[in-house]
Image (cartoon, rainbow, N blue to C red; front, side, top):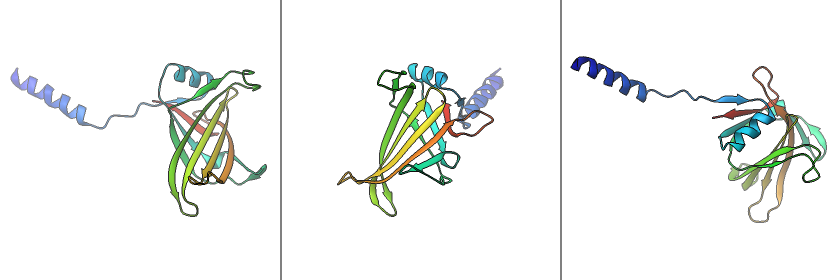
Length: 158
């Protein structure tokens, strides 16, 4: 009996010390995203910028083959026609100080608009922390990906 208890305790200890699988669920539509945020759940966004359209000064440019991501910690939801917006959307943004090879220290500002039709607009800017001058301003257009099609923007419910 004691041997069985020791064996069970050892097995419990071993399974608890193993790395846990990250149980993430892919979110593929606006309604599920909004519902998750309304429930206070954690969402992460990962962007494959090379799969998105890049607009700089109203001209389409080749998108860099870069990947970025962030946690959605703050957000606002604007239903259609609440602020003269024809489509409802969820807005979220984040700013972090980075050291850039060309610009030195800059604020890296990223803003997302997740539209109710699945489209996503991403605005990325580098802003001088002293003068607040915008050093770079790029807008990417993508869409929520599903399990079979990479449209550039991936949402994960954790």
